[in-house]
Image (tube, rainbow, N blue to C red; front, side, top):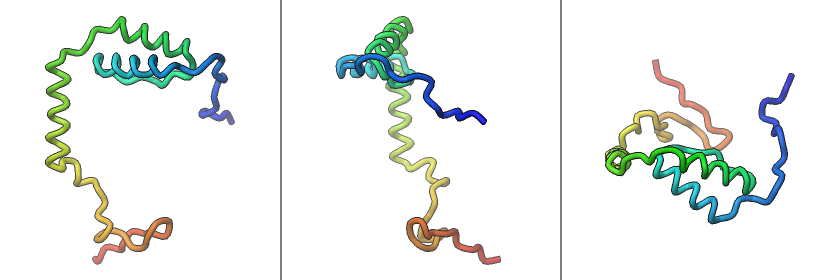
Length: 103
């Protein structure tokens, strides 16, 4: 069976410069996309060129998305999926277990 998590190649070349990394993050934020962290300067340069070809996301859209995220975080939306450790679990760390529901 093959190992799907095995690296296909080793990085050949110097690592990306801090300046390249900052510029790459800035472009990704402006374009509203994510990116794979480059391992070499050449990969960083190709990623920067690809992001520069994309059109920037409108500022109003970025601001609207950021405000919606801040509002959701302030109102604790999505907390229904959070585990209440005092009511639902027993023990601590690796010995923690789910409490049995009373039927």
